[in-house]
Length: 196
Image 1 (cartoon, rainbow, N blue to C red):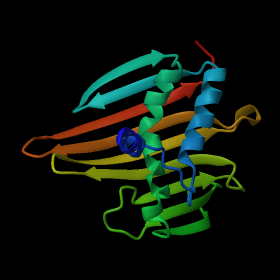
Image 2: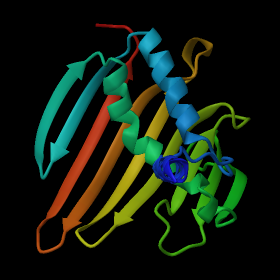
Image 3: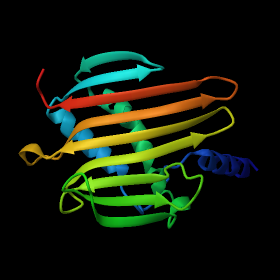
């Protein structure tokens, strides 16, 4: 009897353990892009010049992020990886090799066919081949019973010295609370490798 109870207890404990969900990245590996950039930016001791605006109140800061700070800075961009979850497989229309009318770059677009997708669209601007990514723009939205959030995200890269390195990032958005006012915010940051 004791062994049965112990066995059931072990089964319950094992079944309660949260497992990390692993899935094939159907569209684009945002986690890998962010992790690679984080490692490169740490290695060059990049400085961030950041302007944050919250309901028209602006604040500027200049700092050299450590690993934890970069993780926090990039968290919102990691959320784009939701498009790779199995539930969104085959729900994005992909167009590629489109010429950008404002530059010499090519465009790849992922546009959701679902009306309520958390990431309605992602646009990549690249030079000649997709591995030479110059800019990423995306929309992100989240809605629940307490609030509704819409964000526009942008990452821009510089190919200086043969190293593909983040040079700017931007986030603009609005959050509407139930029975509350809208909160408008923006973050604009320039990343400078090892200057200060």
